Amino acid sequence: MKERQSNIELLRCFAMLCIIVYHLLIFVVSPLHQGESLYQALQIPLHIGVPLFVLISGYFGIRFSLRGLMRLCSKGYVYLVPFLAVPAIINGQGLKEVLKNVFIFGFDALWYLNTYLYLFLFSPIINRYLANITRNQRLYLLFILAFMSIYIGNVTEGDIYLVEGKNLTNFILLYVIGNTIRHEQARIESFSKSKMLGGYLFFNVLLVLGFMFVPFLAGKIWKYSFAYDSPVIIVNSIWVLALFSRLKFNSHFVNWMGGSIFACYLLQCPGVIWHNCFEYPIHIINGFVQSPILLILVLIIFALGTMLIMASIDKVLNPLWNRLVALAAKYDEQPANTAVDDELAALKAKMGLN
Image 1: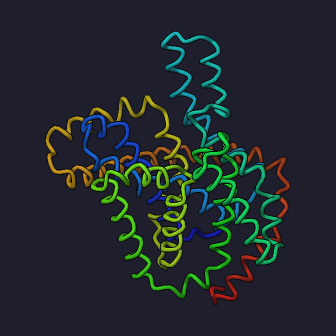
Image 2 (image 1 turned 60 degrees about the vertical axis):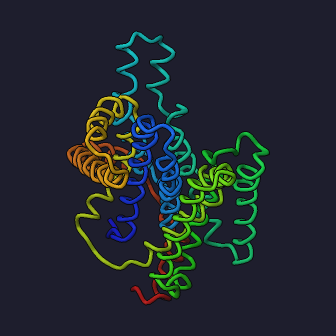
Image 3 (image 1 turned 120 degrees about the vertical axis):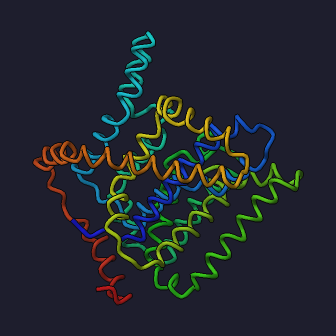
């Protein structure tokens, strides 16, 4: 097993933190503070969690195998079915509803899991193509995907199947961008980290303030800054990945957490988790905390604690994942993705990382 890169594992944790705090804002806090634009405005910079996951997949390259497929599907079923199917049975819902919750792939509420599965299945073809294209071909591919996803899907909303970016086209765009960032890492290294961070913070503060205090711009800012295929979300996600790719450190704890982030995402998906584990404590906290800044800080601490608990659950279940993966390994030849591996090795040599 290859050693994890702590900077990118920290980025996984940051992405998961964004997702949980974002969900806390829209599902719990905003209903308690209707009419307060701050909590809606903050959703814009926080809505980058899912795009970051896909960018990271492109940055490293998905290595398709039956073992990986088994791990992906088994975690989906173990973490989701009990929270989806059992309540449906208890509530006396019909067989159709129960089965819909059992066969989680194809379930609309779990769109990310479905779309990521499609990307996973297509990854060998995508990787092979990306490893053998010229710079101009890469730019052309990015242009076509961006035109379809950003312009058609978000700017004009000309195709209902591309709207919101919850689709394979947008995931392939993000995957190719992630691969390109890794491919151009030497160029990224030439930029000042402090200027990159300062620019990112300044840009997002302007977005939040513009949404809150410039009414005639609020609608436009939301349209071009919120959906997963919106230009602002994609630019913000690229910005953050580029920033984290510049960090150089090693942390066993960060690597430990990063290995369970997918489990954290799955565990926070079911509505029963939100209603029974998140809403009640946040409602109590909201009654005591009057300052918005302090409330946001409490949400971050609450989210970090939740991630730690979920990661611990995943580690306890590690023997189960290892057993299932071992079963799949018997049928998994897993030919090496030599084209991608060779490209990565050449890039590391060029950057002096070997």
